[in-house]
Image (cartoon, rainbow, N blue to C red; front, side, top):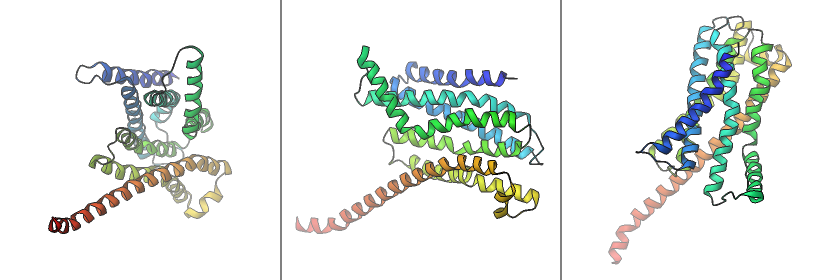
Length: 283
């Protein structure tokens, strides 16, 4: 029954180690440890997201009856993905640790090294607290609910939830580009557009869409659906949607900053071009 769980525990850490060692030791790459760790963590997250969204599409498109239809991939991938969330907490910590060291806070031996570990752990939990809580919630709450409490019903909705991961590869690529100061590139701008669109559609509109589909199934308008289902369903949706709204706000704020900087740079360039003839005349 738990073969998929064991497989996930091997695949995700194994892919991370394979990627990191390849980036470090291949003769034409020879990346530093910090760069290899950070990029490998993003790569594994992207791979998991592509797999999850693909499974989600297969499941949701196969379940014509949104309540009773089942698909074997639902339970299998749910078990397979659980180790990813545990691994990713560790991977995010390793990324934070290497960023900490790159900034000049080298870990020393003995008690100084212990203090450094405590310091970076506190900083990591402070910065990534919401993400860590989200991952733990997926393992400790969503996994038992999806495997035990559902009793084989609602595979369609679980498939829709898996498709929320479609935005993750764009988020990961954006973080890598920002890390390496590539915000000015066309790739970063195009990736930003895809990130905004996929995040909004797959993580924000997802919840109203599922309410609408259920309302269509039972013959209710969208606004009446929340009042016709058990309160715990609404609570679960709110708990899952709240961090998505927060992260989407951060993405929009970052996109606005990039747009503002681009406009300021364009205005400065236009002013310089406009004053150039006068400056040449003074010469």
